[in-house]
Length: 296
Image (spheres, helix red, strand yellow):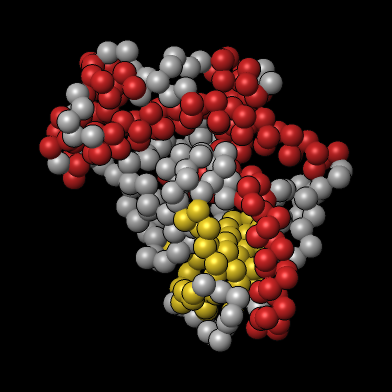
């Protein structure tokens, strides 16, 4: 691996350690210095790299995760007191929590509990309570591509580990190479993964992912569990560089950076990522995957 590639992967691994720490400490007092220590970076360099790879500031990320967690608790645990929720989400007082909640969602926690429709939410995505402010760091613009009707033969799997669906990546790769590629032959347009539901947290044991192949038409497959048809439509296509393990950081950057800035109108279709042949994980100049977001 080249020096550039090693540095990219090392940086992403450090950010991952920080993200895992944040998820386990949402109820605690978090400072940039304390979080950066888990990434083995100075606070200055950690903040700069966090924005570059995650598409938002450290403080913004922590705040949005705390408030999303609080909104989900209010929604799911209607018998729990507001102050208990506030303390479990890292707020020291009821008033501080209420101010932050109202500023973020546009209503008080009590109004939200009475009817979640009172609060602002994201439209067209699977985590409606995850709102974030765009970072000052510019986000690369995607290429807009019109895709004809396609078919997706897939197998499903559950769970993420530290943000990534690919804890079992080698097993999945072997299943694709040893089964799908041989079966589909020239019909296979691309190997893809699709995640219609975003993980609720870095380690989400319930979320379902799908992997398999993109083809022009459905065929009789003994490899796949099922098929999904992608109707003709436009996609915003983003490039990912480096290891597949850190694809979730690129997804985060897209949804919390580009989407927060442009407020795109999303189509009711599954987003997906396609894996480029012979990926060069050692180079930061050559993309290894393309992320496709369905847009109008």
